[in-house]
Image (cartoon, rainbow, N blue to C red; front, side):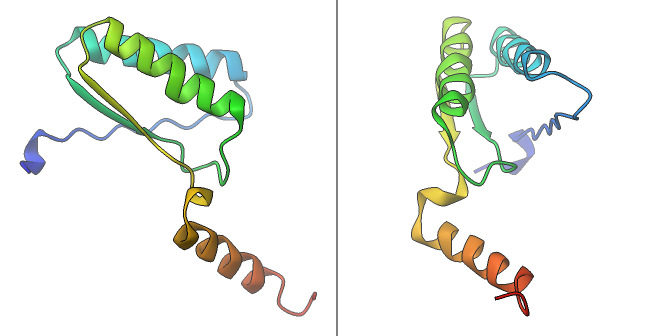
Length: 103
């Protein structure tokens, strides 16, 4: 793998922005990447410890459709931490650490 060809973008949704504004930005971003010649896109939402149906529909479904419709060839949504035993172990470790002395 040629690491010099990997681009990493980070987007944070502040509380001052509406969810609709954040989604519109992500949709525009996926569209712009595809139209600029990017063929492969992986998206992850590490701020979510669980993916709800709305998250999956917007981040995976809608962004995938926009990206592929505008020239992208491969879209991958990387699941939330709760999608694996290892991810659940991390969450359990953090919760147990933070609740020490409380339970």
